[in-house]
Image 1 (tube, rainbow, N blue to C red):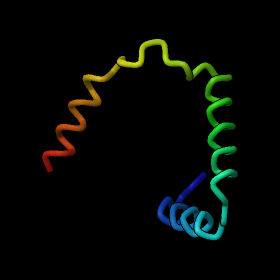
Image 2: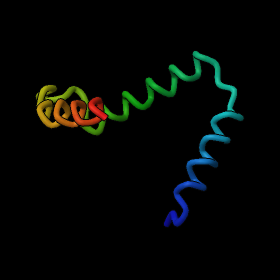
Image 3: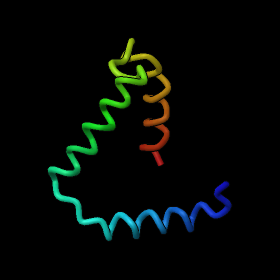
Amino acid sequence: MIKNSKQLRDFEREYEKKQNRDLDEKYKILDAMYREAKYLGVFPLKNPLEGIEVDIKIAKVVNSV
């Protein structure tokens, strides 16, 4: 269990800074994540606009601050 989320975020940031990945490697990671999401049934979305009203309300509140 993670008890100190700030410490974990700091660790992740530092870890990512130390990783010198080139663009090709980043695309391979992105492609693998997409294939996994497709395998799990997340993509393609059955209804891409489902829940858009909530997203619009949240965006209006965030942008008004």
